[in-house]
Structure formats: structure tokens, C-alpha cells
Image (cartoon, rainbow, N blue to C red):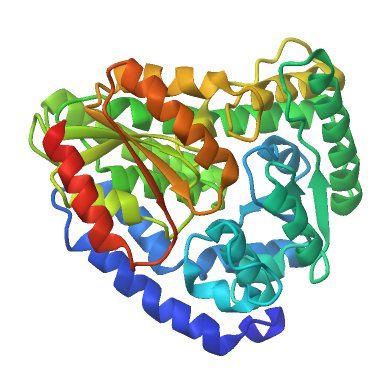
Length: 418
């Protein structure tokens, strides 16, 4: 299968050797009393390029469309409605950076470096098995990255309005969604209908509802699941089969809710509680969570794309026509408060609200190096959070391990003061 996909067998083998070792050191060895149903997600990481890749390859052979995406502003509902498979492709490690050297500047976002490296270096089978990729205009770096990636693989770009509060923004986004639908219909050979779109909306909503329930349990003290495990669950949800996720999430949520009822936690009651807000954390980017949770505190919430933004808001269906359903999709996705928008006061309100709901002791504003949107917002947010009486620690880092000792010192000092 790897040869047929065109995988660089040597580099892929190196990655597959390193990932289980890192996962054991971060997830297995330091954690105690994990929910039993986390075993499924441990298996997924251990077999990260196994069963799911085989499923995708088989689906392609059966004529199903496989689409790679990089952002939650690409509606999964549209792909699922057309019997397609959506695979989230963002990279969370600097392992693949060598493959993007010479085509990207040194001082660019680590996520972009990682994502392009996995494709250009032919390391990730999900890239190679996708029929085409869907990019979006959430930042300038990504917009230019799609041009580079497009030389190696077909990339369709969805243009996101950046001033979303203007009346014409929704009309523009609806037009973009309709153009995307036309692309997806042609690629899949299927036609979008009110019936299949409503069914897809219901399925994706069920998955999001379960993630929301999982996060609700993290409001408890003691917290019943670690931040690392909750983050892993969210990361896997971006590329695994939604039906399987619904099944396995249901089991995990029931177990964790029972833990809350029984007062059972993964840490002692009264452990310091941290909210992480900022840039998305793609697999295997677990650095900040690991440092926090080995420094005497727990991450109880993430205001990120791999956190609350992923399941925030519902597609409120108020009609049966296709136009009404597409408008409902546009409303839901434009309601997500990302730093790509201007103004973006909604994110400030989200963080302060979540800090209260999760009873946090402090907020870490996490930004990847050279992510201009989030770096600028972090300056304003730090002031706003301090004005609200919420302790805050801004952190800018990358995917390397070189600054881990320094970050641990800063985070431990922060935890001691809150």
C-alpha cells in the first residue's frame, strides 16, 4: 500500500518509530487513573497510519471522494452529505520541516512548515490518498502556501470574509460555499440535496454534542480527564470516521460523566486549573499541555480550533430548502471567533466567559512563532484579561523541544503565583 501511494518509506519509517516512543513518554508514563475508554485513542495513535488509511484507500477504490482539509471553516457537513471523506491534515511536528526548506522562508509559522513538509516530503499517506485538498484564506501565510502546495497536489481555496460583521460578508461566504459545493459535486459524482445535507448536519452535530459533553465534565473538581487526553480526543476527531467517533465518544463521555458523579478525578481536588487559548494544536503537538500537567496544574479547557471552537455553535436549521440549509451553515461557521477576523472582540468575550465557566486560576495565551494574527491579539488579550482580574501568561513557541526547560520554568513560576 505504501509503495502504491508513493510514500517515502525511509522517512515514513523514521516517523512511525519515533511517534510511539513520544506518545508513551507523554501520555502513558506520566498519567495515572486515566479513563479506561481512552484505550481507543491510544490505539488510534499507535495505528495512526494503519486502519484509517486502509479505510480511505478502500473508499477511493469504491469511487468515494477523499478530501484533505486544514481548517474548521471548511464545513464537514458538505463533504459528508456527498458521501465523501474529510481528513484534517495540519501538522504538529517539526519532523517534516526538511521537506519544506528552500520553498518556504525560515521565519514562517511552524504549522505551515509542518503541513507542507508532510505533503512535499511524501511522508503522510493521508495527503497522498486525497483526491484534492481544500485550503482557505485564514492567514497570509496559508494563502501563499496553497500556491506552493498546488504545484504538487490540486488545491481548491475557499475565500473567507475577514470583516464578518458586515452585511455583505455572509452573502460572500454563502457564494463561496455554493462554489465549493459545485466543486465537491463534480468530484464526488453526487448531488447535494436537502435530505442528504440535513442528514449530514445531524451526524456532525451528534459528534460535536458529544465533544461538548466531554468538555462539560472538565468543569468538575476534581477534573475527571486530563487536558492531554481531552486534546487528543479533539485532534483525532478531525480525521477519523465520524460514525466511529460518535460510538467511541459516547462510551468515553458516559464513563467520564460517571466519574464526575462519583467525585473521581485524574488529579487531586483543588489542583490549579488552566485555560489554554490561541493557535490550534495538531497531532502530535502536546508540548504545552504536557508541561502544564507535569508542573502541578491541569488544563481544563482550550479556547482553540482544536478545542471549544471546534464544537461551538450549532447549525440551526430553519427551513427545508437547500438555500436555507446553506445559509444555516454559513451562520454557524461565521459565528466562530478566530483571530483571522477583524474586529474579533468575540474571542475576548469567549475567553473571559470560559474562564468563569471552568473556574480557572489562570490563562495561557499560546501562540506559534510568526503567527501574526494571534501574536497581535495576545497583546490586547493580556491587557483585557488582567483588567478582568484573570492571571495570564503569554507564550510564543514552536514545535521543537529546545525551549522546553525554559517554558517549564516559566509555567511553574506562573502556577505558583496563581
